[in-house]
Length: 104
Image (tube, rainbow, N blue to C red; front, side, top):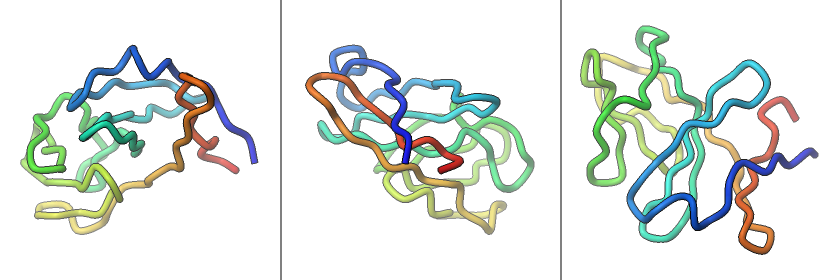
C-alpha cells in the first residue's frame, strides 16, 4: 500500500477543499469539522469535475446539474447521478496529509 503526501494540515483550512493530482487523476481533499476526507473529482453522472461546486451539509454539489455527493463516503445523495464516486483513505503523519494511492 502506497501513501502519497499531498499537503500539510495547515494548508487546508476547516470547511475548505483543494484538488490534488495523483498520476493522471484528480482527487478532492476536504477538511470538514477538522477531519480530512478524499474523493475523486469526477461526477458519476456526466464525467465532469465536481470540485467547482459548493459544499454544504457534508455534501459537494456538482456545478453542472446539481447532483450531490457525500464528502465523507463518496455516496450519491441526489440525482441526476445514481452512482457514488470513489473515496480514498486519508491519514496524517506529523502535520503531513497523505492519501492512499488510488490504484493500490
